[in-house]
Every structure is written in structure tokens, then in C-alpha cells.
Length: 284
Image (cartoon, rainbow, N blue to C red; front, side, top):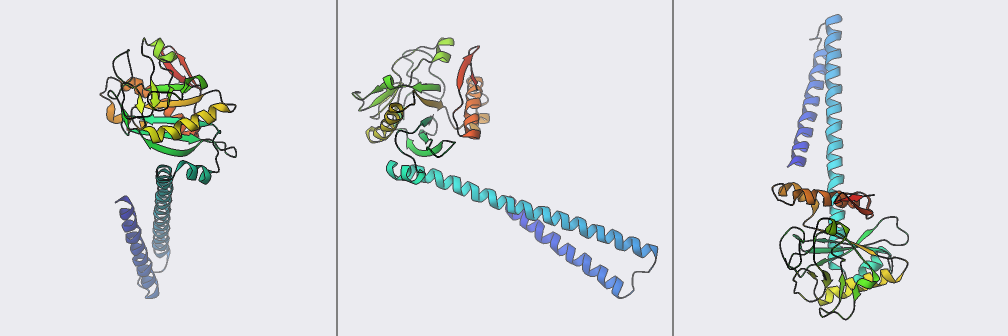
């Protein structure tokens, strides 16, 4: 609607410019405008009006061009996300010029039931979206895990190490998120064996289904077999641009802290370093 309005205004102002210019021309041509200082003032004022209209016209034209560019950018981003969902892992790696064993970064979103894997190809200074996988199941509601047995899936910033991998899991394949982390312990939260695993059953974990966990587990395993000591896993209740829709939630302040880390990655496409101070996450 905004784009159509801009086009309408653009056409309207163009017509006014033509009409004003034509009337001035007829007045001078037919000597209907008297000569002298009054005439000069009229012509100068008319000229200024035309110049101002031209400036407005130019601004609208630039805005329309910018809007068009933004739409194209959104289409590219949307296309990239669609490809990350539809192509096989091997196809997507080839498309990005990336290889198994390069650094990866994982994000999960509860409400959207999505897991994203980002990879940093050797030739790139930033992480690129590699694949998106649907979360088959997680237990609990939006909000963090508080205590052992509450069946809540955790939210926060975690790190997976080589020792976290379990190729002999009862749920096909799994890796431990490392809950409770330093933040969780500082806030008195308890729990254990919180995983990302196969199958589609959850009592506090993120179940990805057997086929998808094979891709995810392999990428984590390869990344940790290189020089990388850990893989960052950031878990959010939803895409954090939606936070203002949840201002009445009792978890709003906690989520506001999570959003700080989320936005840093959104701006740089490099995971921030995460520390804990005064029972809050801080980012470097």
C-alpha cells in the first residue's frame, strides 16, 4: 500500500508541475503577466515553486527506488532461507563453498519449532546460514528451565564440547547442551541431561527426528574434530524481533537479556562471546 501511495503522489506532483509550467509559459507568451518588478517576482516565485516540486518529486522517486531495493533484498533473504530448508545438506554446502569440519553455530527457536545451523566457510569472515531443520518435539512451554523434573526445555546460551557427543544414545544420536550453565547455576536452576537428539519424544530435550539428527550430529562432530573446542548453541523462545508482543510475560526481562545476544549476531553474523556477571548474561 505504501508503494502504491508513493507512485500516486509521484504522478500527481508531476501533473501539477506540468500545469504550473504551462500556465506560466502562456502568461509570458500572451503578455498577460505585466513586465517590471511585479512580473519578476511572480516569475521568481513560480520558478521556486517548480524547483521545490522537482525536489519533492526527486525524493519520492528515490524513496520508490529504495523501497524497490528493499523488496529485492527481502526477496533474496527469503530465497536464501527457502534454499536452506529445501536443499540437501551436501547441496547446500556445495552452494556456499563450505565443507564439513568448518566452524558452525546453532540457533533454536521454540515457538517457530526451528533449528538453524550456520557455518563459517574458510573464505568468509562471517557465518552463513547453512540449513534449517524443523524441531520434531520439545516439552514444556515458552520460558526457561528452572528445576529438575519440570519438563521444560532450556533457553539461553550453551556450548557443546567433544565430550558432550553420544553416538550410542537411546534416541539414535545426541549431544548434551551443558545445562545448567554458569548463568543457570547463578540463578539456582537445576536439571541434567538436556540434549538435542533424534526420535520425536521429549521430556526437556529438543527432539529432531532420526534423519535430521544425523545431519546435525555429523556437522557438530566434524567441527569439534578440528581446532574448534566448542560449538555455540543459542536457544530462544521465538524470533526476538517479536519480543514486544510478550511484554506482559513474567519472563520479559529474561528474554530482554537474551535479545541482546541475539541482536549482536543479527548485526555481525558472528556469535558474541558470552559471559555471566551479576546473574545476567553479558556480551563481548
